[in-house]
Length: 128
Image 1 (tube, helix red, strand yellow):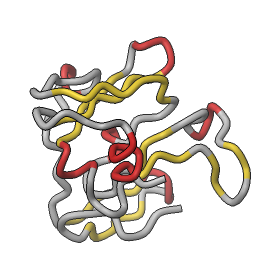
Image 2: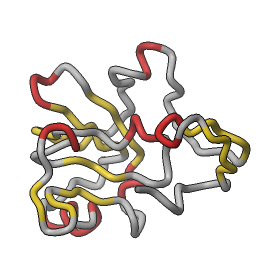
Image 3: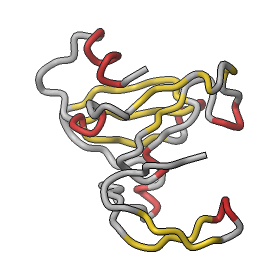
Image 4: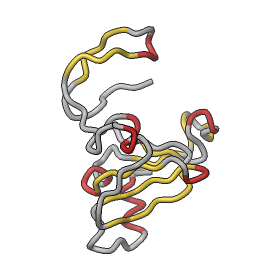
């Protein structure tokens, strides 16, 4: 489900500028700008290939935000706050950048044996 579709259904207030995702237990959270949430490929998912997402893959609901680094694609979402200001989340409070902007360059893919891969500027175009 596109986040833009979900947001159009909730009668969001005009002062909303950020979304804050909360995971199970409300220990993990992260915030993203509204303009990123409204982009075409920003999604909320509950299934993949016809199978419901289990906890290992971020079920029951997870965000997929390909325009930002993975820590902004919150797993196991139980609540979404619509906010007028930014609040740093779990990983941001531990030193990760607030913006999570993907910049062009080389990145070591730990999920692919440590292979070095080129990351294009702006969004993740391929994923497993």
